[in-house]
Image 1 (cartoon, rainbow, N blue to C red):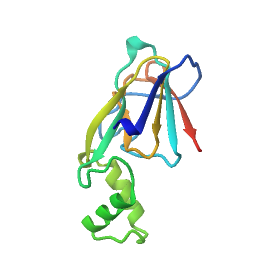
Image 2 (cartoon, rainbow, N blue to C red):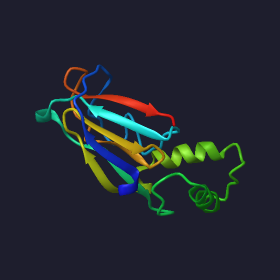
Image 3 (cartoon, helix red, strand yellow):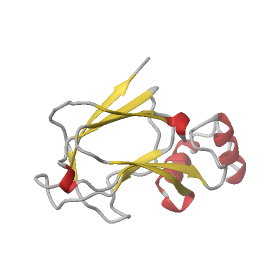
Length: 147
């Protein structure tokens, strides 16, 4: 897990979107990886309201913590579907969205003004969504870092 993240605390303020509380079926995100090399998030919610953070996940089927050639091969064999098959992309998206396929192996907690930079290809998702509307939900600023 330590090779997936760098944790820093910086004074940064910004405007961004909010995510609000949702049940596990209607969550705004699921376990995923990003295409860029690094992802960053700054938490802008005051500490007294902070819940959750970023969860880090391991695939139960392959034990992988990031998308890799091995991960694709394991899924291809398990579901008897070639990686070159046009349906494979849908399989991947469906697999990522099924929470039963994942084991949470860590969480980077939300704290006001905390900047978290992680290797974007590690499997991750938001945790502890809260709030009922845009005024009291989770406020963050996201960055994509292409190196």
